[in-house]
Image (cartoon, rainbow, N blue to C red):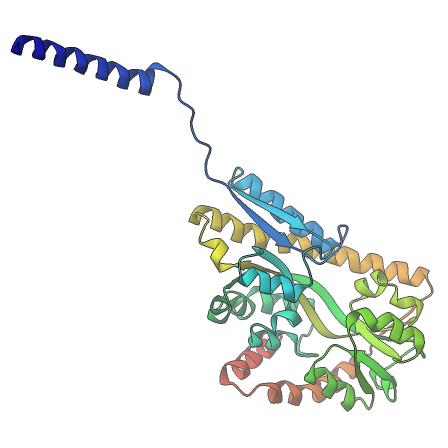
Length: 342
């Protein structure tokens, strides 16, 4: 009896070993593909906009460099909502990445205000040095952003805001005296317009064209690219290149979304985002040049603000910068921005 049991056990052991061998090597097993993550990116610019091209290059390149482990689906034309609502959705897990802008980001992290002081930048090189260096990146990826569940990937150029009007060519910024100027809701801009003895008028962006056409506003401000894109030249054909504010767009990513991605792929995302800004710089410069040429073809009067006006506006605006926010951190950053332009 015992011999029979031993033989049966031996046979069972052999069969079990054979089954294991067969399962592991005796037949071809399917290998699981690496785990992939699909991210949603909300972009309010149209399909053919230069910043959209950079955003889409970023998405395509991340997919290629991660070998499909990270797929970024880009939704242009504001299809997922306005920028504020998209950022709010991102905080609650509805969207992974948002193409935002510095003015909108001030609603979430007030320190972004330091980057948009009027007449604080000497030129584009100064602007890029600040945003791409310790000052800008320190805000973009700082503790205040993390507290809001956000991580800044990169800045993008968004041009300089300049004044335009429907009444007359402006040879000087002082020619705005007595005009009704539409601005974004900003105490700083209201103070600057008032200092020029003009009247600030706050409306939504969607109401600007109608306000100019109806005469409710005499002028407004925007980048030369958007001035052409939105056809503001039709109702306000006098453009003054005063470059009072250097604007920046940016890509913001959800901190929660980052937790589901491997470190090596996060590094690819971060590096590729910064590379996309280098690409976008060239696209933006080309867009500005083409816009200026096209506007001249349309008989728009484009005037360069004289250098003495820049000195004059610097004297007006400097007290406004330092009175805007009295926190020591804010004041120190102001000093550093000014120093970076010397």
